[in-house]
Image (cartoon, rainbow, N blue to C red; front, side, top):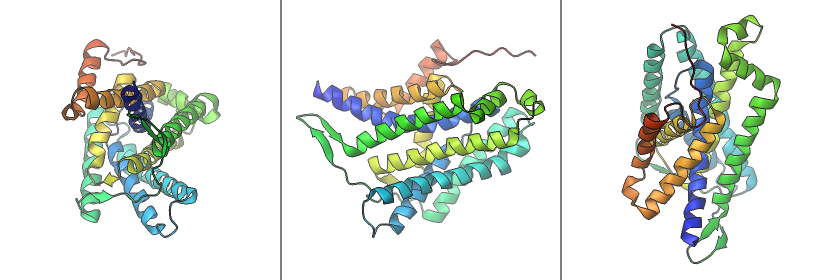
Length: 299
C-alpha cells in the first residue's frame, strides 16, 4: 500500500509539471487554433534563466527569497521570449494557411534548440540546489519530501489561479471572446493583438515556473530537455481535449500518474512509450479528448 501511495505522490508531482506546460499549448490553440511547438523550447530557456539567477545568488544560500527570485526570473524570461516569438514569427502569418504557421513553429523550435547549444553547449548542467530536499514523512516504502509537496501545491495553485483569471475576470472574458470568434471580437472593440500577446505570455510564464519545479526535482538541464517534456505535455493537452484548460490539467495528471506506475509496476523502459500509447488510444477512441468539443465548420 505504501508503494502505491509513493507512486501516487510521484505521479502527482510529475503530472503537475506536465499540466503547467500543457496549459501553454492549449491556451495558444484556443486563441489561434494552432500548436506552438516552440513552447517546449521556451520551457528549456526558463530552466537556463533560473540556472543563471541561481548561480548568481548561490552565495546567499537556500532561502525562500532565492527560490522566489529564481522562479520569477524564469517566468519573466519566458514571458519576454513568448511575446517576442509571437510578434516576430506568428503575427505576420496570422492570415496565412495553417501549414505555414505549423512549419514556422517547428522552425522556431529548432532555432531555439540550436541557439541554446551554441550559447551554452550540449553538455547537461546540474541545476543548483536552491531548495534543500527534506523528508516530511518517511515510512518503510513511503517518502514525502518538501520538494514534492511544493511542486504539487504550486501546480494546483497556478491551475486554480488561471481558471479564475479566464472565467471570472474581464480579461478572461476577452480571451474567451477572441477564442470563440476572432473577427467579431475585433469588431466589438476588443484589442485582439494585446489579448493574444497576453495569452502567449501567460502560457509561457507557466512553462517557466514548470521548468524550475522540474529543475529542483530532477536537477539536470540541457538544451534538448524540452523535447521530451514538450511532447508529453502535448499528449496531455490532446488527451484532455486541446483547447480545454481543465482537460490540459487533468491530462497532465493522468500522464504523470501513468508514467509513475508504469516505471514501478512494468519497466522504466516504457516510461516514455506510455505517453504515445495514450495518444494513440485517445485518437482512436475519442479524437476530441476527454473535455474537448467537436466543432463543425462550414466549407
